[in-house]
Image (tube, rainbow, N blue to C red; front, top):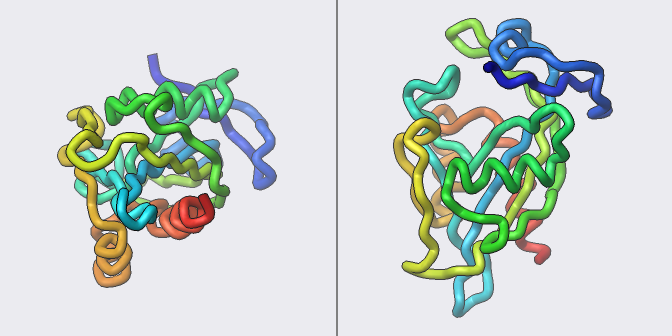
Length: 186
């Protein structure tokens, strides 16, 4: 059974539901979330690594592009907190017990893809700092979602996004600074 997306207006008020593929074919504004999982350097106390994924080539859009740790849509009747707690372990194997999440902000974006689909989302950005560090900061890649997943140096990611934005999913470019500002204030 196809997931139903929560359609919203520009104030993020629910206005209905629609099948996932149909919403993307018609370019309807819907609620989404993006999760950024960081690790903290034990010596400096600074969050200096971010878990990123290269989206699976078979995804309905943005296949092969680098993106944040996890992204998805809440289900009808599900809060954002419930949705993020469900989806983070499904995509990464990381529990919100080991990586408590907090909402960092939100934004609306619209991207039209070559395959005729349109992503038009009211995207809520969540951040978490994994309580484990170094080699203990493990994850389990879901092959249906990502072809590759790794902890990358945050400064290197920021430089690469500026140099090669086409290598990244469109929402990632806008959400990344929101996530960074949030963890810098923790």
